[in-house]
Length: 368
Image 1 (cartoon, helix red, strand yellow):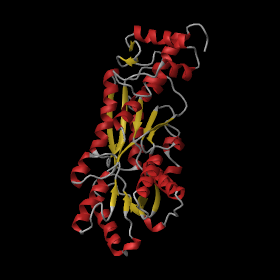
Image 2 (cartoon, rainbow, N blue to C red):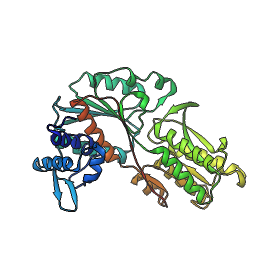
Image 3 (spheres, helix red, strand yellow):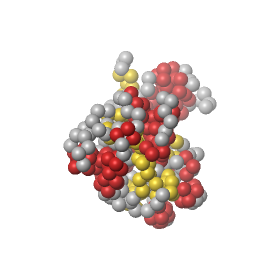
Image 4 (cartoon, rainbow, N blue to C red):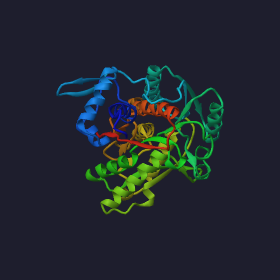
């Protein structure tokens, strides 16, 4: 960076590289002057001057000894560029309502603040996703956010996202892969799988089943499930335990909205047929709906939860927890933050196209 106008440039960069990517909301605290100084490798006086500029603009408020806080959403990073007027969202039909609601809440908050129109479409297959993305790309649309439909290996190897629609800014969320060559936002599901497995091992479980998706007996690219599975395998090996194939319970992927009960019954019948020493004592489910279905069906089969079988879910789905009627461990991903970050990144890429970036969001556990 040139010395002339350096505080102004740093002020712009704080907006584009700190406030927008972190989806800060009014009242949220910015990093300290020292943290910003280390990040941008300039003097503390330059950082203070940049913060003064943002305070004068009404973007932040500075409190003596307490730090700097976001005061109002910046309309956009100050750098010049194309204006974003309309963003599209495409998501799979099987997306649970609470999850979708949170994503939409995050996107709508940013779009409302920026006076951007949000257009939403749902799809049931990979082919429909491709067709809808192409259709929306030729409409009056400035950027697109896609919650990718799971792919088979064949579909993944020829994924349209990596080769088509090169002129359209596309942000991928949750089930995205870097190989799709788009800026993407995912949760750290590998660490989740690793941490959950370690917790179960610490509680004395050794026979831990994992539900892994297949598609008509073929591997399927379902990012969150694949990453958790790798974390599960690595945690077992870290503790010197050889993963046994019989504890990887393959579920055929279904786009139907309620496949959980049949899958649960199949798993539990297989569970009861095994000798006690060969039964899993814990199972890592696909997500909360599947965990709740397992709990519901286990009660009818006389299987005690969690005494006979501890069940772990994902995504903190309140509907599923009401159905289960007993507490069970789950993850707490911030899908609202994912939605707001996706909208902010879409706006940024419209204004200033860049090389694809990979964002990984941490996830907390609610362990019971």
